[in-house]
View: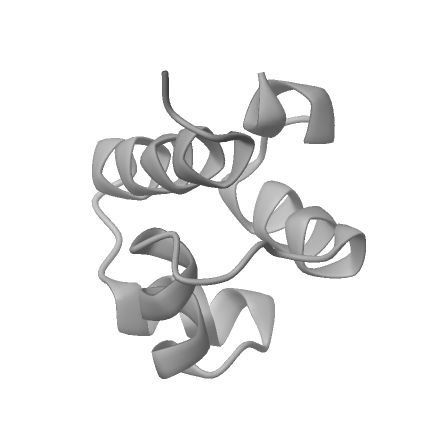
Length: 68
């Protein structure tokens, strides 16, 4: 069973791709470093709440939808 971090990572990737965004473009929209976003997408470290909020806002989804 995937961890919560792995599930969020997969959701971020799926939503980013569905919106036609590169990691660079999403990083720019969120104000995050692209390397940080890449590490999050590889589930190398759990994101904090502020980071999740920034990503959800940039992807135009609710925070709940991002972590489901």
